[in-house]
Length: 256
Picture 1 (cartoon, rainbow, N blue to C red):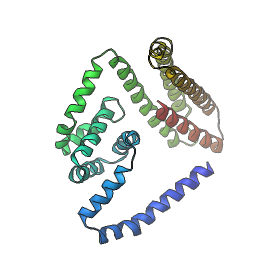
Picture 2: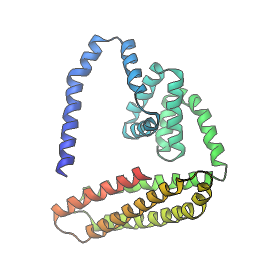
Picture 3: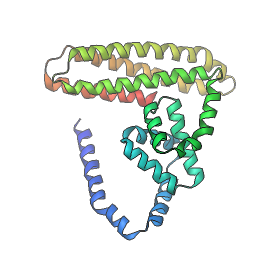
């Protein structure tokens, strides 16, 4: 916990210094066009696979006004192909349940141009959803939405000191249900889909079987912590457990 606090304090102080000193200097010494060039060069260094995680994360983390500002700035400064790729990432994250539908609809209302850039991506995803494999996409979407809810509910544990056992109990029921759903889904993949795929892509089964095993261990630890949390009265120990539960919930979300 102390290490987490140290990292947090360091990053917050570092960003505050940049915002107070470096960024005003960039604004003073570089034209808007030069700033755009700098940002394009910076974006070009981000690996595409990480960008597909980064953009939805930012969309979900920012306020509506900040989301609009982000998209408007990208629309103004990014090359056509770059912005089209970013818009497709956002649309795909909505289809997968990684970005809330409300966030998307509000964004399109404020930046109507976004709809045109994402139309092709949405059509491609709809075609995928209409196939047999689309069933797996829908299961994954439901899991992601439920994980988002679990992470949000884990944050509510902090609203009482010590945590309300009823909140922990409801969260435990939610986790148990989700684990059953994930276990059934993983077993179907392990027993049916992956063995067939292994005949065409040798070595792929082991990777996903190991990941499924890691997921089961995360669920097991999370359940144990929630059971323990319902029986603890010491505020200090409860606070440590709450942070552990929140960390495990986030780890599950990231792993899925």
